[in-house]
Length: 600
Image 1 (cartoon, rainbow, N blue to C red):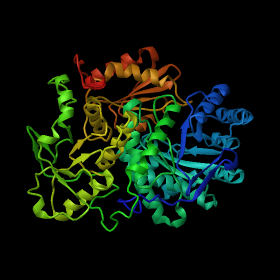
Image 2: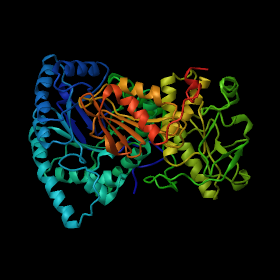
Image 3: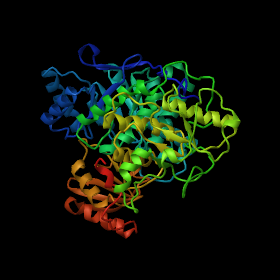
Image 4: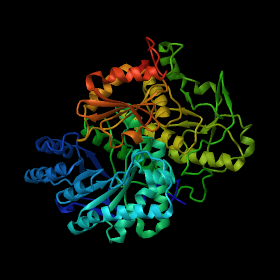
């Protein structure tokens, strides 16, 4: 199966057009030859019409092209009429999307008023109780018929009214039926979406897009790759557009890095027709990241014919780290089963070394100029005699006329052709712009280039040079490795963006939790505004802080709720107590892994 036309050169995946609203009056067309569409979501209560209108206008002012609003109940869905009417009255015709999870009746109300409805197959007319059950083929077929009965009315109404749909599968909300047959896997996510797509097609409705979201960038990448490959297998008329996003990415640098790894990797391979960057921040900031990310893709991709005759020796649908020999970096091993190492230039080391304590988690693990790294040009086949042994650390030579993703993929192929298992040092850039990149752009460039390759299973060490600040580049290296799931040097947070379902102020609470817990190396904490995706997205988190009711918090261990209806003003303390009960608590050192937060 192929998920893109070439892993070496950029060719955007051809798709049919999906029309959202009236393109002559502010609507958009997703897919085809149209530019990638940027979208975001409101953070306020859907029943607050004035605030919904205000936030929508603020998003449109910064370039948002589609605005999503949650509609958890029929009452919320009915109020979309008032929101849309007031927007149109002030001349705003941006398409509105209703976000539906559990209630088909809310979807049938919402479709009357908005241009697009998003449904989640794992929640829509389906169940999720984390029940273990064997489904016979007959029982499974009966469940599909029940879902068809619930979903078909929405499909027919969308067709009649000229609306669009998004079949939006979330890693955190697969149904028990899917989980028991396919497991919590990319295959399960894809199959869940295809079941609903077949119902659309049975009714000759094609104005829909797919999404495959996860808070784990590597899982998200695998899901979209598998979906694209499966759609191609189904036939040329299954060429539906893709909506890209890393859900619950979090805030600040971490949220941007996770989003850049997931969204940017797929965009560079030609996948993706509309994107949303999900940050635990004010929504207009998401659009700024969308703009910066989209602007980088032409610079980070190969537009020429590339090396299309060369196949890749790894499975793009299942993550597996490339097998490599071990090189010695002084007292540290690089390659094999060792964590991915962080290398810096001598100039960076000279600036940061005086400020790093011996116990620091964020510190250089090698100096590039001292490592005798073998620099290779992979544009032509390599000769065996040019590489002395498998334990030689290798990298791509600066100035090679290929983007880093293409160049390092090709280096891995060349080594495979020779039967070599040399550890590979990844670089975020192979040339330097005349003017240093801004920190925002340098972060995205490094996250896309290095993160994409790490998601392919490539890389035993990394070198970030596009960020000119020494301390910033060192911290960025470690943050990319954490976001890509390659190593853990600090607390990991899964934090959803705010929406109308959220039962507490996510930004304030996230800051409060981080202030108490950001020294817990290797601990993963999920901060979820409601239960829609909470239990599922927390499946690989150690602890969860979830809105259960207004001003009430439920605490989880993994995906199991253990404490209920805790008053919000006590909940952070109770979370800390829970961490202590499970032996994950340590006292904070006077200085910790975040000491290089300031520029050095």
